[in-house]
Length: 317
Image 1 (cartoon, rainbow, N blue to C red):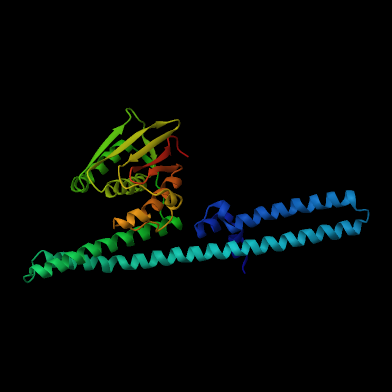
Image 2 (cartoon, rainbow, N blue to C red):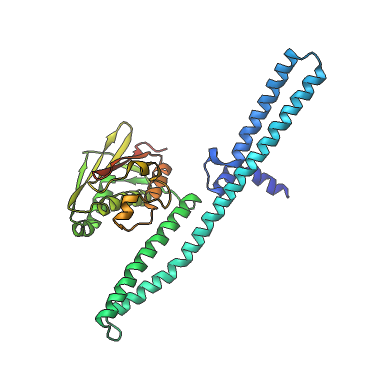
């Protein structure tokens, strides 16, 4: 190992970023913390031993023995964490590579299907058109899943830069409501937006905050099975912006609520309704909001509906 490699190993923040982990989850930082604990334990053991054991050699021997045991345990634990972190990093990179490679053939497939359905080529019969419509829907679902996988992979490996700038959150929400208008009308859902007046600008990444709200709004509309209303609120709460989206949908069973932000998790009642989704949306939302320095939560009752909320800091962090 060269001197440069040794220096790289000592750069703990860089090693943590490489694994896509926070400081307190990073094996390199945990090893440093455990090293400090071992040093403290060594001095404490020597102090206690010197008070209760008369033989200085026994004090030294017992102190060295305790230190050696603690050091071995620290190495074993850290190695285990390091192996898990490396496996997680490799998994994320694999998902990223596979997702990236799948995007091009899926785009080509969708383009070919749309060309056939446009009737610009030879005539397509009614039954063939029906099959092409099925292919189009499924290719769209696959594209959505690949896109979500790519986003999750990039978030976990910290490859999506968080480009903070000032923007008006109210305007972003209004634009999203406008974009979701056709989907809401087709689902027989009314969207109601209640922003507090004279709110200051947000200092965050508008693209990623839009993605978070987009996922929450999409879920709110999608999980209303009959005519209903989605209520959106935006206000100031202490030193934070408070955003809330409330629906009258199927709700989340109590036993499923603790898993709701996990990757690929979909609650049992949603599966019964055969609602489309990858199970990645809420995981993405949580990751984005936490990166922005905010908090996220929800309240839900099965058969009544759900309310998802998040906060964003008003002052730059």
